[in-house]
Image (cartoon, rainbow over all chains, first blue to last red; front, side, top):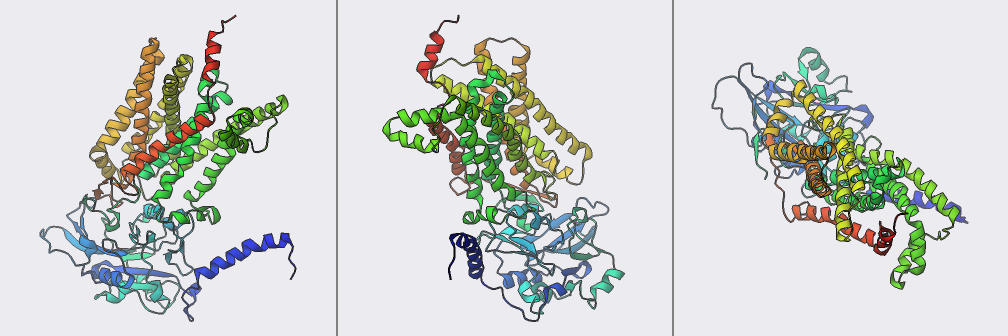
Length: 243
Length: 395
């Protein structure tokens, strides 16, 4: 094959890009999984959460989350009377080992599990300078850790405090909605470990998913709706004091 | 582990951006401000500031060369930073950095300096000692024609480059402000005024820095400070400082009056953890005192020696104040929880990658670069020429 110098100059960058793809490897395949047929999210039923911390422990074990960082955590709110702007909130070690018993009987107590909201218009995705964080066609916000610079701009941009810089990998890390599991037809580790069914993985594109009936019949809200992030973690009976 | 009070989301307790990210807007601000000062002479024909023209350009270059270093050191994977050039994410404000930086460095600063110094570079490439001659030879880039017509073209092109450079300087620093101002998750940062405040504070810091550098280098060279020059610079500094302060106060008053859901949290922070750096250093010592001092020189006829001292004090306090402003923006914006229910602390390490020692080195490094640049491309006429000029009786 005779190639002119001009043709080689054109082919070289193309070859370099192709080689980069070869080095990046092939993603884990899930033969029967079609991304475009799903739009994943999560339903959190606040009255059902008992603050046991099973979900936090399951997440840490499943995803090798480093100590002191959280892909999911549980907060306990204590709201007295009408003072909704100043609730007393605790989350000792992310609620991993449960919570201390309540000392004050006044007001109300409830638990709020938190995690990445897999926003449809996620600010973290918007600000990433290299596009290492992205939303997959099935609605999961993910991080390509082989590409992330570790600049932490996404951590700053997340209104919910769901991201952190992994201390060893030095890249952004967050909830993947157990992508490696849900693409294999399983549920997330946190949902599986929840003893009361307070967390439910839902597929908004699946017409048979009970979420549709639930959304029709319950008062459901997302966190910080004023941020207009298109958050997809739905909370049943979310109290107005929750931040 | 950082100490904290109240409730923080568990991933928020440690700060993501350290003192190095404070340095970054401080340094780019000096670059933009120094360049605007240089353009006063070149574009707006303010002849009085001519003695600082070249010094301002070299100062801008010295600081611009260091500007990316704090960012590089901060990155978890600095080796991947070229990806910002190759695969920039179109919706990211930060992705613009590489292009704005390169544009400003190569298309504006280096080009303008090269055009302005081309005659000297060519002469030096012929007459400098053998050791340094090759450096000048490379710097000529093969363009050795210094005929009258050729130099006239240099002058014309240089003027156009400066003209382009002014909006570029605004872009360079305005976009740094946008990086913070566009984060809706953080009410301390999220403000459309942020880029404008950054631009004016950049002008203030750059002008103050060049004024101080001019006064110090003139003293070191044993020459007399051109008071007409520093008086004019101080006048511009004063007026731009008033605009800058007004904008910052507008932002503050707006926040206080609007008092949205974040106000109570931010207000508490300003009165506690940020009290010293914000109220005392930034607003009182770093803004009000220099404005009053500079204002004094505008309304009262003071002796030269007093004015010189006032300019030295006001210039130094200005730099401290602007550094405090950067600190309060970057560090202050991370001290409160996005839940508005708690506060964390920032403890600066001493000898780590993002510690105090590295920050000090990075602050001093531009001065080292400037010393080399001044040696290579002297921004002022040789001392013998100055003496000759001074000795020549005015006709």
